[in-house]
Amino acid sequence: MLLIPCPWCGARAEKEFKPGGEAGIVRPLDPDALDDAAWADYLFNRANPKGWHRERWIHALGCRRWFNVERHTATHEIRATWPMGETSPDDVERGK
Amino acid sequence: MTDRSFAQSPLAALHIDGRVADASANPGVRLQERRFPDLLNLRIAVADHAIRQAVGQALGGVLPHQANTTSEAGGVVVCWLGPDEWLIIAPHGSDSLAYQLDAAIGGQHAALTDISDARAVIRLSGRHAREVLEKGCDLDLHAKIFAIGDCAQSGLAQAAVLLRRLADPAPDETTWEIYVERSFGTYLWMWLEDAALEYELAVEISD
Image 1 (cartoon, helix red, strand yellow):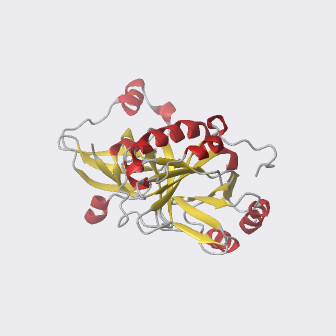
Image 2 (tube, chains in turn brown, cyan; image 1 turned 45 degrees about the vertical axis):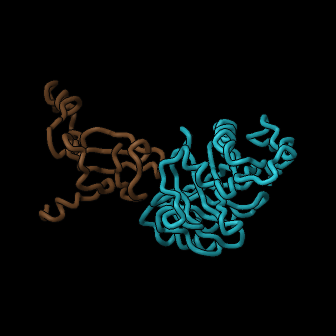
Image 3 (cartoon, each protein chain N blue to C red; image 1 turned 180 degrees about the horizontal axis):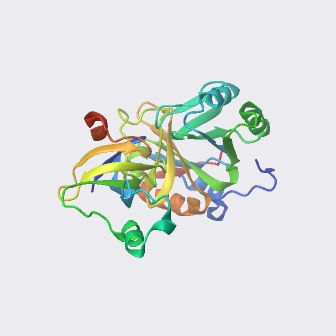
């Protein structure tokens, strides 16, 4: 079982959380301007990397807040978690 | 803040008070229902320091801002539930409290919801109370980690609960209050009784 550090409650067992898929997917500003392929890409296609992956989780049995997690999909190592709407610690370091 | 004459315990079907006489002589675990506390759920946006301060003052203290902690003033306990959410626990009949808090909010953006009838509250104490909880909860409940006055939302035996640690009744005993959704109350009580069997159980008259 993973030990996930919720940005609010601290480290908790994985079964308190539910995953919400890839993070940082931006809804197109003008969906009507998109062709079917571009819209389908937004709706369905995800990165699915073997390596570091940014994803959304909700602390369902705790504070019930969504937040971001950077997790390695092969080793399950969690490098960082940060609240919604904030910049990841990595990006802060790189000055993004 | 139900009229007490209409209020029915969420655990009524268990006839707990009729079980008091069955208590073991030297119980390792005591179970008790805390009946009809007034419960208010409070939400204030994270950045709204002014409203937080006003509500904190109306409660006679401050809203706890540190995760998983509580504050207490004048018999009213405030539990941290999230960065913008608190549970206010008051004795039954604190009808004026909601109006005082509403006045403190003063029409600004916040949410105050009476959830008194939405929870069952179970009090668990004794020498082996912590061991009983540990059978169904992943949290580290050791006294060094989970101090008196701390609270945490987590899972207990498949139910979503708010766990709160109260003052120790004796040096080798602990006391906990479990807030669970009303419809889970009977299930959780039965689970706790089962988990407490090996430690000798006493059911206490409801508070």
